[in-house]
Image 1 (cartoon, rainbow, N blue to C red):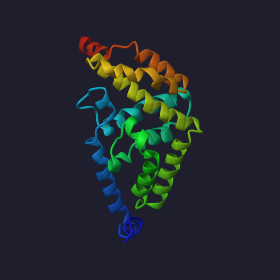
Image 2 (cartoon, rainbow, N blue to C red):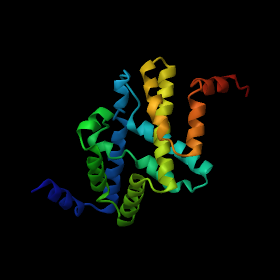
Image 3 (spheres, rainbow, N blue to C red):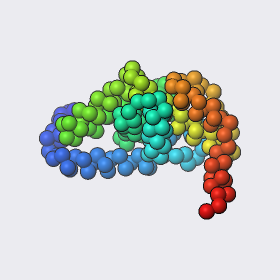
Image 4 (cartoon, helix red, strand yellow):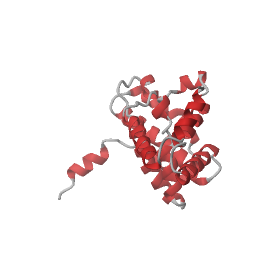
Length: 205
């Protein structure tokens, strides 16, 4: 039996609840998968994909409010943007040069949601297509949040002595499209990443 046929046969064997539990378990793998681009910058134990996605969703929520759009779809696009990496891992840009990773991402996401409830599957495919198209303000904001989270992480690594992380400051900011994301980056690049918690410690309760 071909691999596609095997995938199709499995779709009919699961009820909605079982499929949901399996999906949650698969999403949990993102807690173990490292963001591989940081290895190039000499960071041996970078953050996980799950850690990136969590803060990306928070940033997306903020930008959506600042730009005057409903945060619902924005947050969902940001949160599920890297869900495919549960199956094919994270691949840094050098790898993308040699492998058609975008096609793999699309196929993996299609397979991941195939067993879910029809309404849920339809919605998830819809916001995934919207994100890939980058034609709505919501999708642009979700992409800005993804870039901005990477830039913020790079600044934090840089402040902790990983000087090569500064290379991420060079081209990534050019891809920020919303005024809010651009304003946040202007603040971040001058910001001391230890400043926030030092201020909390000084706070008298």
